[in-house]
Image (cartoon, rainbow, N blue to C red; front, side, top):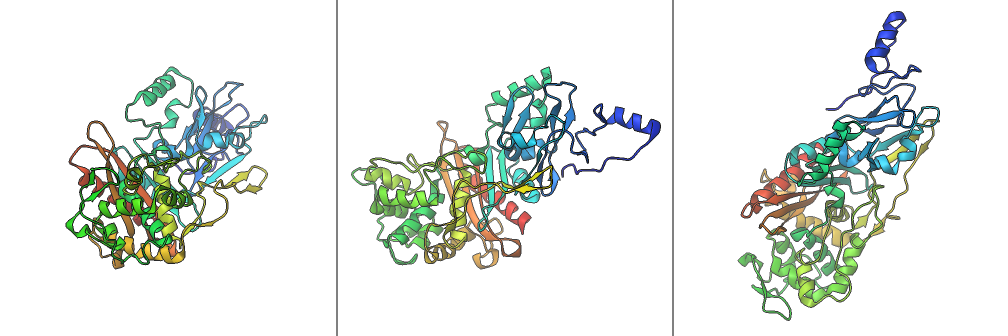
Length: 459
């Protein structure tokens, strides 16, 4: 899948000279070929995934910038590594840990950055998304460790890591591409999450005592007219009339969740959403994450109802919706997400990253989380590509489809959780963008397949 770190070959005499010429060693004999990591750790420090370096460096002959970054599987890991360019600066982990990864005056790096990313999960996400515009995030619900952070289309940071004309052309092309390959959709795409937000609405209703159980009748009319308007919420099945929360999650009853949101009011729903991580503009993993927003200030009853179906001015990133699923999977507890396991210093010491999310927080009660786990398993059973019964698949989740383009294009979501290998509780969210009008159901299938592929790679 990607290059492994090979030990430097031991050669002597003329062979040593030939080896140095053919592999691009620096004058002091340090191995700098992009496929190899020098045992002396000369050059730039590396970013590691699954114990293997996905970055490298080579000598430039430039005293001011003596080493150029190289990448293995650059497009696959770009949402994780970011880029480091001699001409255009750095981004992502390359920027956050620039001081650690840069070579010191002696030509050696301060250390390496070890990520939490699972290489199998990352590749599964990337391959399943394919050439579509979209993103996927997988995390360990109990530890907060990010296992996959995928964004497509992607870019290869190796193509502009230098300062040649070819690098300038690659940089210009990547930034001019209308499909925005430089954008990390997993962390920075904030848009309406549609039906996936109904998980938060259901949690808020149970926590507020609006309903005692997920099986209580909700007294929801069909159709439901938004408060103080003549606009009705359409698209619900006849089975949605007075449906319980369990039924409403399974059959995507927009009428039920719009009414629940209006009954709760924006203030109570906002309070619950913020416990899940909405309206937090300080989240880092340690790369800065775009804010997921629940509307603040004066919110009309009609607008509150729209947020109940994941629309209006409500926005969420794929990472945020994965965190929502993680809360349900983890007994109501929210753990700060993290993409870095540790920093390994050149002197042999290690350093753990500081999380931005504080301590573990109890977002909702265990009873609420357990009730929703049960209800979401039923909801997922109807959309899983294999048609598995919820008791067999062990996957719980919720889909969503929202029109988000002037041309009628749509984005489909699937946020889910499952018990992975060794009982690990895994939360995953995938979204697929740019679906032509009328292909929303096909898009839902694509988002579901992405999640299933990721979960299969972990378990």
